[in-house]
Length: 397
Ligand SMILES: Cc1ncc(COP(=O)(O)O)c(C=O)c1O
Image (cartoon, rainbow, N blue to C red):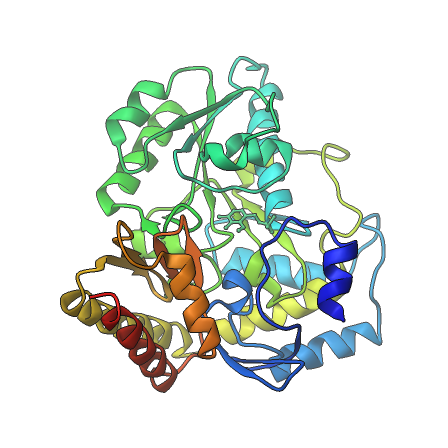
């Protein structure tokens, strides 16, 4: 019934699978026929604390019964406290709240341009981004994105975006002239195939931006909120940006986005220069406050690193055993396994096989399996998935 309704009345922009889900609890999802699934995707890196975490549910319920929304023309406690908490825990001094990742990136793009225009340097409007990057689906973030396939049919895009190869400092150097206002990048490319930045590269990017007065924007929408084993992925590189964007896991499933900036970069915006009706609503920020508190608890991030290393080691074991696996890479609990799909099953077909066996994973570019489980996943569940992958890959040998 729900499947037909969706097919008849919802835009068919997603390739959906399975029966409708009716319940989520921890790392488990349940469909309307009582089938159970272990979730190794978490809504694509959204439900980092697991489904319906009791503390977050309680925070949402309490806020829903107190104050759901007021305009940003007024003050609210959850928004103020969340901004304090995020700035205390990061390089940033100020936060602008939005409702999604794309909107947070829109805000970052607008801030970078206005920062220079406010100083009378309107010629600095270009933004360099990386090939294979993903920054969202609005017109500006689509223009920023370095993947042609998702731009098809939407031309002309916004001007002023230059794409350079990822992890290639010489390419960045030659593109970075005095018309550039910002470099925008993901510390680990997610949609691009789970590709981590090289440490030396990121340090050189920071240095280059500092030397040329160019703003450095980190899109941590997928990598942030503990996903990569530190609260923000860039922490493990020892490199800080001028601007950072967050969304996805920030409120464990309640829509929210945030753009964080240093005081200097934030000076590009003043009263009336940007806004959002729902951005930073009490409901979403109350949930996010709970998320930040739980992720910051002693030992939580260390456990993400441990489980990430364990998972990666198990997948590397599969690589040694099965020729089809050509690479295993990632950071923390954002992991990609690249396959040789020249013969046998594609990544999407293997994903469907896993789904039939009760495991939710994801496929990118039809050759990479992506794993982004709730950060509360246990080694027992990791072992179960690895055993299933092992048997599926054995059929491919
Ligand atoms: C790195 C990155 N940036 C931006 C976005 C866009 O976020 P949203 O879908 O919330 O607009 C995504 C979503 O997958 C993402 O992974």
